[in-house]
Length: 190
Image (cartoon, rainbow, N blue to C red; front, side, top):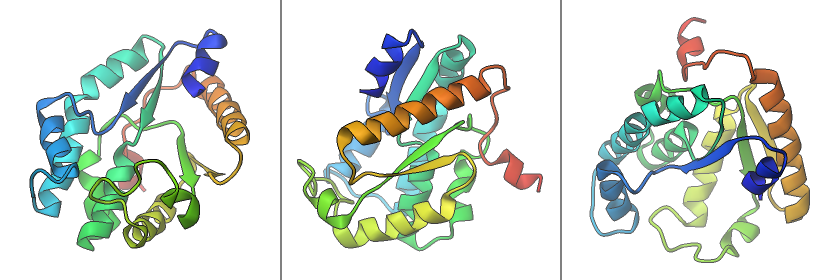
């Protein structure tokens, strides 16, 4: 819905998703997520980060040509999930992504346990269980900063879409002539 709405407003936009399961590293991650292989949690975390790094040049190329990039699950997702699986602190989990292109806006869809479990095919992949998702949600809440916009995902789909579209358009206008920031670099300078 978001991509279509932005296209209808003549805003050039592309959708990318992580993990990018079409790459060599992405195939390894897919095998792990679909329970075809086992890997230590620290290893899979570093592979998720490597998957983002192998796409960095493509991300920058897209942004430099003036195209808005919508990314489904990026670095914060990796940190939140790894901290939940390993108990490692969020700083350790964020470090491998330090220096990647930083998002101008992170949309966090906060969803109730009931709504989450009603999603189609929910529970098919490794990390899809209620207790684990509660840990992940707690980690996401610790990661929230000024770039984040929290939306109640239990609202009607049209309300959610309207909220996201408004925030995305506002962000595009505000960052149009700004340099591309590097992820977590400002944290190191403070």
